[in-house]
Amino acid sequence: MLLITIIVFVVMLLVLVLVHELGHFIVAKRAGCRVEEFAFGFPPRLWSIKRGGTLFTFNLLPIGGYVKIEGEDDQDVNPGPTSFASKSIPWRLTILAAGVAMNIVLAVVLLTWQGLVGVPTLVTDVNYNQVQDRRTFIVGVDEGTPAMEAGLKALDRIVRIDSVIDPTIEQVQQVVKESAGQKVDLEVERQGSHIVIAAVPRVEIAPGEGPLGITLQMTGLEHISWWKAPWYGVTRTASAGWMIGTEFTKVLGRLIAQRGVSEAVAGPIGIAVYTNEMTNLGLSYILEFAAFISMNLAIINILPIPALDGGRILFVILEAIFRRKVPAKIEYISHMTGFGLLIILMILITFRDISRYL
Image 1 (tube, rainbow, N blue to C red):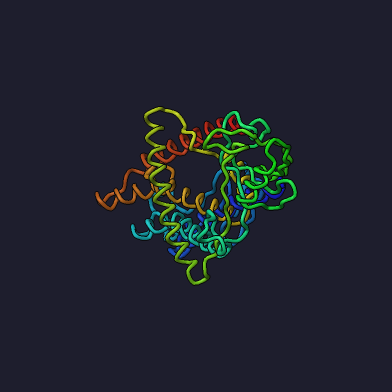
Image 2: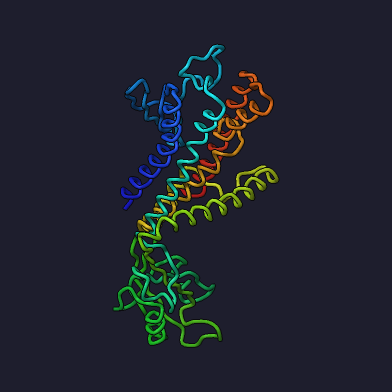
């Protein structure tokens, strides 16, 4: 299972980064710019090949990627016709925004695919027959109960209870009720591993409590018709973008107020851990997770922070407003400073992830 998780993680990162940079690459080529390098990850360089005047590189640090376009740093006094600096303001804005646009498109595609595969849904009496791949999960374990003493945990999926395979909530409740005072075997799936746990349901229970002390929920996959799936992809992407943007604003507020990295922020290690959890749940969950990461990348990159796409867009907008370019040296220093701060932030988040997960 670990090998599958590693493959999913690497493929997901490759797709997210390459799609973003492919947006810059395609539009830059369309504008007549010379693309000097198309890179996945950051140096040191592991592998490279040159095609069509562009050096394609694969680097050691898988924390992003970049497309290096001739004249993008605006250091040339007399930029040539294939230089980014020689292009019109609309072309430059389009080139810079193309990566974000591609991440949004990717999210729509992934969520459309999820609609066809099946959207995770809570099972109710109303939709029971429409939901497939139904699974019963423990979503809560009460303190001081047989379930807690036995070692059952929230998010455990009940694979079997005694002889009943893939039980419904009602079947679990029935077996537990009939086994009061006697040992009952539960096989649960936890982070991809199957564990058999023995518990003894209580005979005497307080009002409002159950014999084991667990809260159950059944989930499944509800398929969307192929002709409705694209609209689901668009609307789900829009709502995800709004939610992520709102949460990101809160994270920035806490970061500024507390001068620390919020627990809600995760780096490559944290994303790898979440990837493992999604892989255990199945393809639908992987697609949704990848779509949300893609939208995160889009929102982060459009922020007006030096070194990011949004920061570069800001300098072009300032040029359009004041009808003169910001001095190249000032823009260069701004981007290098922003890049340095982002690297420091990434290192802090990575160390925090190491202490949390490893």
